[in-house]
Image (tube, helix red, strand yellow):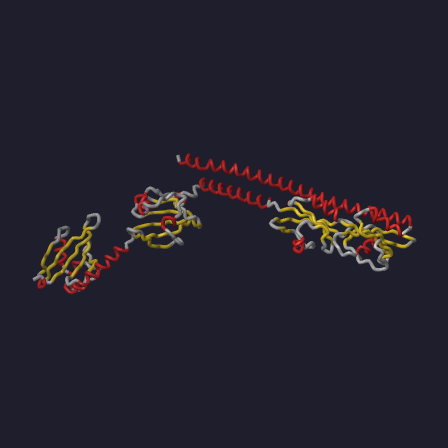
Length: 479
């Protein structure tokens, strides 16, 4: 029967463990797949931004290189006037000598050192076209594209200044949604394309940034350097908190799985049963004790309470494995202590002690009994009352031993100490006590010592005589 009841408890747990294990493994695989899909999608969006930027850069380079070849073939620097007419994005054109001085310009300014030294240096060293930022107008809305050429065996650089407003509009339209944004900066940290409010630009540091917040939206940033330029492309992807949801979900399922496994082991080994705490004990015997017995596990949950414990707390419901000990006894504090619990009608004395098994604490044992403080107080009061009586008082046990004697008894009988035999004190009195043992109250006279004695039998709760109470009186005071 017990095996059947145990199986009824463990089978649902086994089923729950199997289902939770399957769901957990499935979600781990599914989350990995979804995470990979999201990463691939974001990588695809980022590639679109990079390809669009590279296409724009390549277009400007090709345009500049073609005009450099035309000027080199014609060997006519005056042809730079025709360049601006071929593209409305061009704002200025320069021809520089090997020293970096302007020898010809569309705006007519000549014979001065060009401001962008890095552009001149990169073009001369690589002998290839190169793109940088900055202009004579000191704006960041332009790109400078240089291409090397040779005129009359002299090394010359053609620099065309392009406006990027059209490119910016195309980028903004391409990434209009708040989930993905694109920014373009040069190596000096100047923004050519900035997708957010201009007031937020001061909070962005291109050299070392991985996260950025615009309003209430948080973005993760990936940076890509554009080859052959001094430009860097920043890709902003809105945080989707997918990793957080994944971790929370998996942790919740693992916790539920752990709980089910724990409960299964507890039921399988009966670790939550009172019988696992004590070996070879019939717990039905505890129901016949007057003292209340409560056994708790290490979480202070009551796993056993005998009938007396229920009777001490009839107003409270005790549910095994669910009710906490403090719900019944209040704040119990540490185990291995004795304390008094005051109720409206009585006081209870509680002794609580830890339970050890194989060197480990399994729980605690609480023994509950009615407080004897009132009885002790009554005994103390009775003792004081006896001391102040004018009569001598002694209490003799059934073994003829003195249990109690006041000072007047010592005055009448001489030396009287606890534990002495009444025969050694006064054989006549001892014979009278034996003669009237079990009788009602009797008054006798001891002529040898001229005393009147009242002999009173005393009975315990079971109705058995526990001893004899003797009052010693002076006959002269009875008159």
